[in-house]
Image 1 (tube, rainbow, N blue to C red):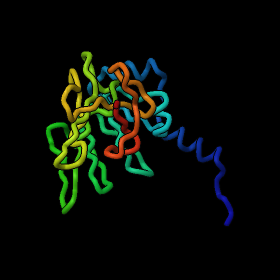
Image 2 (cartoon, rainbow, N blue to C red; image 1 turned 120 degrees about the vertical axis):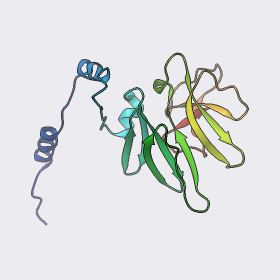
Image 3 (tube, rainbow, N blue to C red; image 1 turned 90 degrees about the horizontal axis):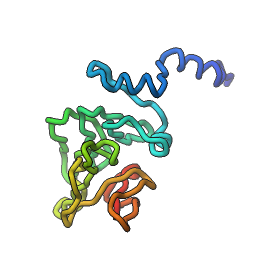
Image 4 (cartoon, helix red, strand yellow; image 1 turned 180 degrees about the vertical axis):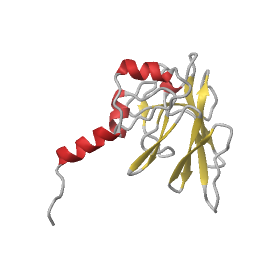
Length: 172
């Protein structure tokens, strides 16, 4: 089979179809309520360099769904993710289906000194909500962080949990 287009041609076509913005342009656009930014970088770049504050990344491998600040990410077990307006609860149908409502996936999504906090349900044996709060003080609450991120509580480290998807970690 003959290759019809080389990588340079494919990249040129992709760059012609999207608008690349400088950091200053992104900052200006973020204050415009009529603009929705979509960060299309690879999820590993987002983990390393950070993303747009307020956006939540739903890993629907091999694709990444980006939920805006006005949306929640709904993580369903078994393996389905989608975005829903903040006022709409995540819906899980079928037997043995658990839903996690994700309003934040790290501290950069919270403002006013709040942190991203995950609440674990013993009954569901899963995290049921991840949302911004002033503290994560409850027995079944953990601060949420990006992979290899930092924790606000002294002595805690950011590590992976078998109860969360691979791209959302918690402090312990």
